[in-house]
Length: 619
Image (cartoon, rainbow, N blue to C red; front, side, top):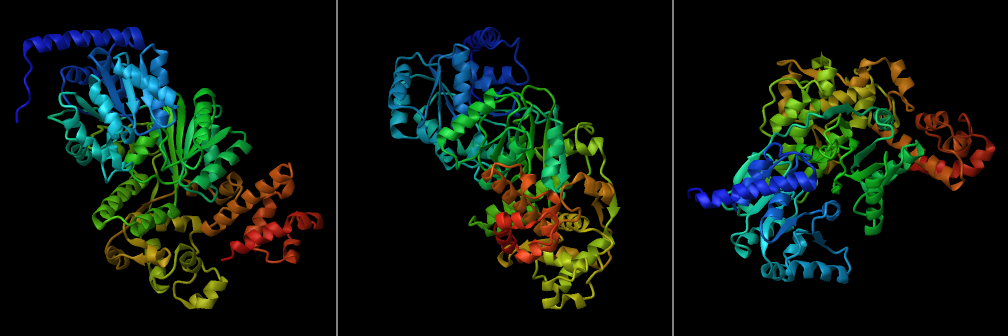
């Protein structure tokens, strides 16, 4: 089918409408002119055409539907999945003198009645609704009574069942084509690879849409990925010292981790609030309002819960847990530097992230084809984390965009990573996994490799294996880095059905036989001396994953007890005492009393709580 033609009269009218849109842009919004693809998108919409708009966060997508809605006759309907975001945008529009409103569950019946009345009498210029609300029969009947200027479907990537932020209600939005014929529809998103773009067009039944694909590059954002050290909180503090007094967002995997991180940051002198789906509506609204209004506040949010906050001066976005895909990562980091000023996207990840994400995919109830897609997205994300090339080029290449030269504004450009010939080390680790029967997780395999004569090693007789102690030339942290990269390369997998047991893949055979050489990335913290590591960290330099979990639990217990007794944490026990607990694992009051800083009074007051915790973390 050929593209619809527009006669000169229609084109002239559209040109006049474009002039009117430019006038509103200048007089109401205060911008001198359109930027990027805005003018072309607005022109197409003013002519009544459907459009697919792919534009990076902060690129001005909102104006692409707001301006045509203000010029065309009727009310523009904007479909948004996030209540917080629609509230922010409506508040900003009203501040500009634009008649805008939203309909959602947070409103009283009286307020909803006022919005409906203004829609019916034609005085409402923009109406924001969630897809769930839009598809209700009463909402559909209400909109069919009104004159609509356009329908904008924001965050359109939510229609993709294979995407990072799927919303089932978006699949029903294909009804809009039949319910409101002749009303132009725009599907807008900041993140969609080529396959997802076509899926959006198909599932929404857009009619011969014009496709507007803006560049993905956010040149003001500095990208940095750090391999997780023994003390990731210390790494985070290094980031925060670069942004003291500035607003930022920190993403965590779980609600509990979000709450704990926000509390710990506040103790460290960085005002922080949690933001996740488990909070009440009132709490989320309060935290959101504070984040918008207070300078230097940090929001700690779960990765799974969208941060629908349009705050322009977010100076950093940090991920302390691995996101689910590069699409999710790009979407979340795009909330930094919306004002175009320098901002930082920082992430730390480690072996545990690789294992956990792979297990979540393997254990999910999704069909096999979806698991394959999700695994492919995870592999792409992990490969990006481990790249030694320009990080920006690699990120843009994932979205099908060519970046001609190294950007000079990412960690790999500014501090080119060192690499090393890890062939022999990899062979040792693969052999150890094989000799231990491919039945154990990383902790036990590394204990054997490092020659640790633990109780479990003795019970299993693994101190007699040929691989026992052959890895003493590297630290535990280095070995975890080797294992992480072997898993990313597909040489090793973690079997979720056997509690994360490490399993060799067929691809490792040429490596074991010496038929190929393996070059790995050297982790940044390993480029410093062991002494420097110890000085920079409050945790032991070679703390393994199990020790790290105990270390954090001990610190959390110390903090809780300190708060209960209105004391600074160090008054309960100093860090040195907690380090000795991690190293010696006391099992009785007598053993606990032998540690530095533990006297009878503290034993009587705190001993039972700490011994209970230590018992829960026994190997």
